[in-house]
Image (cartoon, rainbow, N blue to C red; front, side, top):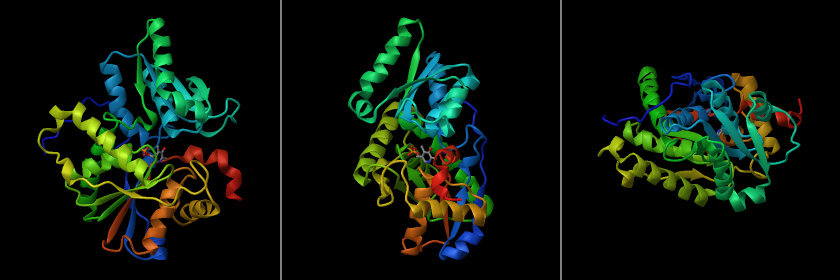
Length: 334
Ligand SMILES: *Cc1c(COP(=O)(O)O)cnc(C)c1O
């Protein structure tokens, strides 16, 4: 395998464990459910974003940047991870957060504040209408101060960030060998598409012989079919020399399971909170109401409906998100 990885910072605690959930699998029936514990890529920096940021931030440093600008929701795991890593690397971090200025100081936002990231709040509508302009405004603002800003898009899902989960597939390859399993399916929550896209490309490059499924937590199937394709095209264009002739894009099909968004992004129904409680008490696994709770619930529902029964083992990527649970504590009704 002669894929040449681009420069990468060593930030995540990897390899993360791949562990079976035997009590839960028995209760659900069907294939054995394994969890790739990417909620253990760090403590405060835990989750999937750090894998992508190892490559995005390496690129920023390579380009001589001293400031990082990125965006997300008020309780964005991506923004929290970026802010913490910037503090760790001595970079200035500017977060463009979609939401209310007076949001409760809790969860991810509390950590963003603690590491002293600069934060600008924009309403959803304002951000949607002017995101390019907002990024340009702040980039120019830093340039005028003699600084050089590097812009990372939402979720670090772009041609650079894709490498994070391509590299994770190399890790999964070793995990499968170690446990002597050949899972037929890999399931992940999908929110900005980069984890799903990286897994898809990586699964092909490292011959995982598994189908990658994204369960969307916002937008709809068509949105992710388009978004994942755009990210992969960009990756291919930016890294032609790294990829060589190994990658055959025509062999890729993007698989999205729609139907588990519920009331909307970051808003969950009772079923999701019940799933969070079930995974917690049965397996000691902490899911969140924004991403992993919805995707895990969706996977279990699909299992019950017989979608994944053609395999003995199935892998759920635990993409993290624990800090998003705290601001929604009341809905757990504990
Ligand atoms: C961002 C995020 C996701 C979604 O990953 P994308 O690459 O943005 O699609 C899933 N789970 C958690 C906990 C996240 O923070």
